[in-house]
Length: 156
Image (cartoon, rainbow, N blue to C red; front, side, top):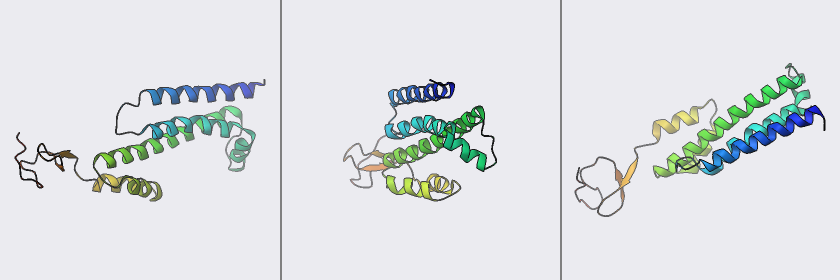
């Protein structure tokens, strides 16, 4: 096994360990486990790609250094940003479902609208968090004195 292969194997195994830890600690209902899994796998995938010969030749054609340490750092950085992007998309999905909004529509909008404008639009228009009525169970805004569906008092 060459030194390059050993480095790639270590990076991939470290990414798998990170993925397992993230999936094991995904107890919050806001962030879906699949978003955490994609985010955790993004880092080793990009590190492996940029450390490979094809990735380094792509870096060389774009004017970047194509040596192994630079390629590993570039892959790690690109992977971290990709992971953060998918975690943000996962948060939008989970938060939109929690607020009873069209989750997939907001995720697609955040993904397709460039320059993070889709993310900003989601946070501007996401609306209040709804809770169940204590009498009929229909969703109402938190802090309302009376249910708009059944008219019962919600207490303090």
